[in-house]
Image (cartoon, rainbow, N blue to C red):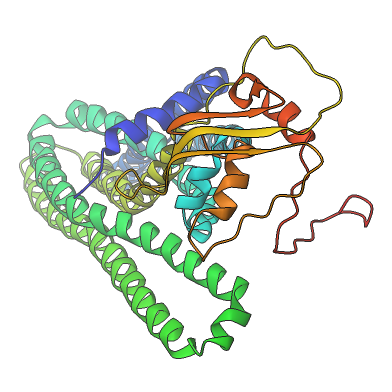
Length: 439
């Protein structure tokens, strides 16, 4: 079932609003560039009329007028290119700065998430959201944002000039718009679910690879190589099917729009030739209109080819925003009384806790560890030994009851102060980047 693409798109646009000043400048530059490029076919049509008039009337070709027309066309072409270059440069900066802020927000969010979220989320999938999905959003925006803006404005400008040259031929060209839009919508609807599956399976595959490499010794010790290989092949096959389907279905859009454009070209060429024969249009006018008809279909083809990029980018954006919208750990207490030396009296009073509400783990547990005593908690795997330490450290919040350290409820203490007074030595050895002293 497709998710809410509209909501993800709005959130993405909201993040771009920080750069709205530069975006406005880029839009103005794009409008100017499109205006220059749109009038080029009409000006070149005038040049054709100058040549035809000189050849068929028996007079010499007016090379002075022809030179002025070609010079004007050259200036317009150069100006359009320069403005397009500047617009692309501005939008590249906008996209990269937006992604920079998005990565920073994700990093801050990870530090505010409770340990329970990290435990529930497969590590490979979490890493994929932080790296692959954000990179895919950047690539999608970088390649599609400027093109969509340019092609949309080109489409509007081209239609306006086509109507000005010949409204009769414009009707023939405009008939292709609803046909093309219907095709694009039908194809995009089918590719959307496949793009979601593609990035979901990418995260799933990354998670399996990360877990297998991290637990390589365990896989070997318990002879699970074949099982791991089977699961990898199944997930890899699912990723292949989703990726192939997404790319194939979305790739159909551009050839379909090109086919409609070619049919439109043939119809305009035939009707334009008839109008020239009847004296209703000049050869230069028909030439300009045919160029506009090709220019008219190009934006549709370009926007169609951008659909798959946008589909993929928005699918990744949904996954990143799901992470950013995840519930954070409970806020710290605003006012507290700092304590000095800790005596070390730890008391559990009627404590209840479970990782899964449907499977109770600890129910009405009371115990006291007096200062200076060594207390050992023994029991089988899954009995809750490590959970007791996690609760003392406030990695998880209690479902009921109370834990106190020297008579103070740990929920009334900032986590930093609480954890600075407790030494926790894990059974797993971890080495972090840094010096021996820091480790």
